[in-house]
Amino acid sequence: MESSLEFSNSLGSVSSLLTRCRTFKVLVIGDSGVGKTCLTHRLCAGEFPGRVEATIGVDFRERVLDVDGEKIKLQLWDTAGQERFRKSMVQHYYRNVHAVLFIYDVSSPASFSGLTSWIEECRQNSLGQGIPRFLVGNKSDLRDHHRTDGQVSQEQAMSFAKAHGMMFFETSAKNPPSKCASGRRGDGEVPYQQDKVEDIVVAVGAKLKRQKKPSAATAPAYSGSFRVLNKKVPDKEMWTCC
Ligand SMILES: Nc1nc2c(ncn2[C@@H]2O[C@H](COP(=O)(O)OP(=O)(O)OP(=O)(O)O)[C@@H](O)[C@H]2O)c(=O)[nH]1
Image (cartoon, rainbow, N blue to C red; front, side):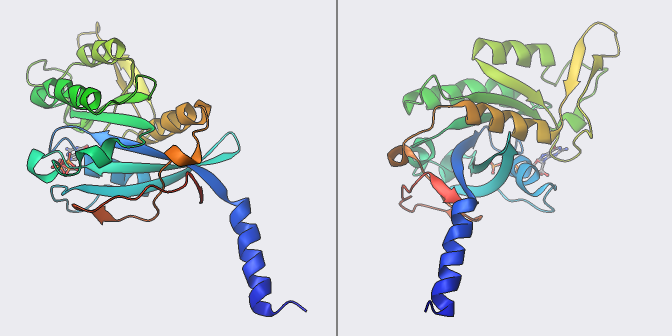
């Protein structure tokens, strides 16, 4: 007769089989201070963190989604924006990436100009053209629709996104709109859009679900939320339990 321990073990494996899901590594990059940590926190935990410090190395956060009946785990790699905190980690960031979120701050044109060097870093690390890329303008709560100077216009961002084959979003990790909004700016001419943070997660999940299933050999998976600094990052199987 099966012991209660064996019985509970087999129940455990049955339930883990039922909840297995595909895990996708999503790299989050952009200049220091654009809000990568706050945005990934908002995407995964649904809240704005109380206090944040500059990321050292990388932080991982996860979000499980149901996309058309399939469970998908997004593993967000919140990378350091400061060169001195990232240089020894860069190759690990780019290994087996499934999607990239490029973040800039809508109230910082310099962070928008900085995107070209992030694209160049992707190229230097052989990120395939087929890897889905998303452009996210963060801190939309700081946008002043009556000013044009000192901010990144949505027209600029949209044409940049188009030129680089990215899907574009503008949102705020701090004060996200409760619904996707679009309309005309103060002068009545220029359209604007405001996206819910959730729209970004859904778009990434939907895009990745349509991707060809990667083989286990190329797929990474980590669980929980933890920090890696100057450590060897192991490669594991792609299929994990949610
Ligand atoms: N107003 C506003 N402030 C934000 C928003 N998101 C982040 N911040 C602030 O921007 C600052 C930097 O945020 P972080 O999330 O640490 O930026 P980061 O890009 O992760 O920075 P590094 O770790 O250095 O790469 C913090 O003071 C946040 O409170 C936002 O949507 N609106």
